Image (tube, helix red, strand yellow):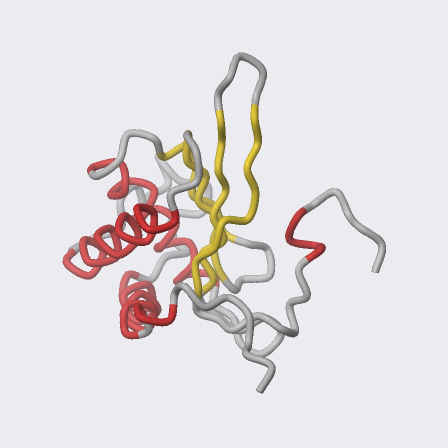
Length: 156
């Protein structure tokens, strides 16, 4: 396979073992700042995916609530393949700390009564949300918490 510019295009998606969290990329910016991108994979690629209302609600809720626990969150965005999200944080890679942030924020999401900014004034498609579906996906992810550190399938 020819090496691509986008890191995830160089990952053999047939060999990963979702769910997991991994460092996907690290960028050193001019001026000395570092950005770290994390791949937060909910679903096994090309086997299953999240529905858009769940994705949309996880995106809104995580983006809002994660900032209650960390001031270095830059962005939380869904993957176009609908199998997970990218979390962008300022600073050097901290996989253990990021897993803790994700777990804490997911537990907050399970306690949420509403999706933040899920309305026509604050969202481009305010009607496309499902807090119930978001909670179900997050529960499944939390149930597999012990597996988050295993990215690739074992060869056995």
